[in-house]
Image 1 (cartoon, rainbow, N blue to C red):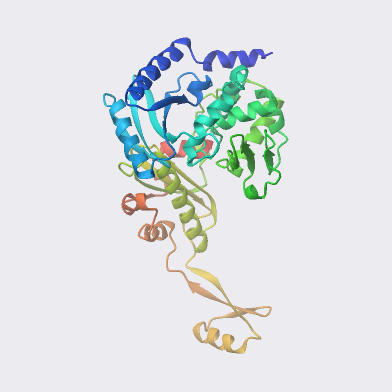
Image 2 (cartoon, rainbow, N blue to C red):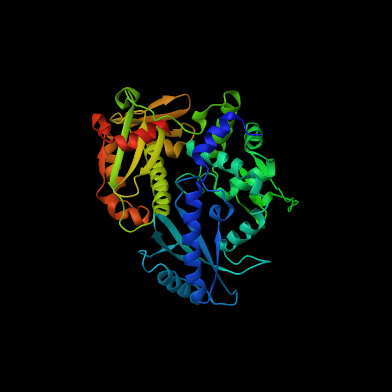
Length: 426
């Protein structure tokens, strides 16, 4: 029996009858068009299984192609089909493992996705989605509310989504977790005791798990025993989920599902801290998933290079509004280093190297058996070093915008409210 708290949450997130009917009408219409083209469609995912949160806009329609069809023909025909079916709805081609066509139909983001019609084996990643639907549809029918609660819990804590932006939990993973543990509360109860390595194999399909030894959360895909369906979940996301589960079990309240907007005094929150922001334009025509991934690599690259040059990087962070701007935030111990740095030389017992070191560094000194000298830095200011980094090779889609990036330090960083609010609360 659901608690009063859970019922209160579910009243806000259960799909409304009007939403369900609208999606059914649109999917029926589009599927009829696909059938007229001579192909077999199937609605998959949360729409098919009734596990979507009210207000969700996604509608995924997969189209079966024969497994004997060549890859280039498969891709070309799927694009042609998607464009014809969505011709009145601004169709655009997007790329994952296969190209697919996306359009907006009465406010729903519809994707026409090709897949091979497989039963016993999987040729491409998208082939799993219809198999997931067949596996889960009946099993999860009586646990839809529990799935909705888990999804909302994760969304509220920025842990929902198996993408490079979130490194979190996918919708189908939520369903398998609820299926495995039996309810939302059971998932949370179990998660509060998870350690740094978790293995869940609901169908007990494997005997060994060494293949996944570098992944913190392993949930064996019930339709593909060779796949960890939780591979997108990072250690940080896993740890955050464990921590949020522990806190929820101590104090169950609605803010775990609907967090109140925080009023942040950025000036106070960042007082005495050294923040540097690299801001540049969002690359035109590049999908969000690619940009988030390349931003993550760029942020890590900047942090590593600053550490090499003796800046102590407390934290690096990346963000984009997915439309106009991208940011990399770097918090360091200082924004300006001393003019000289301590340079370690050889041990005194290494005669040849000692002679060379003394010749280059006449103002040396000895600490125990090791020689040291002062070495002048080429660059002291963090903005000068970053300016140089901006000219080096960067992730491909960001290379143009990055060369025109603006480096922001001091009190000027407070003007970048959009990114700093995300930085402070993340």
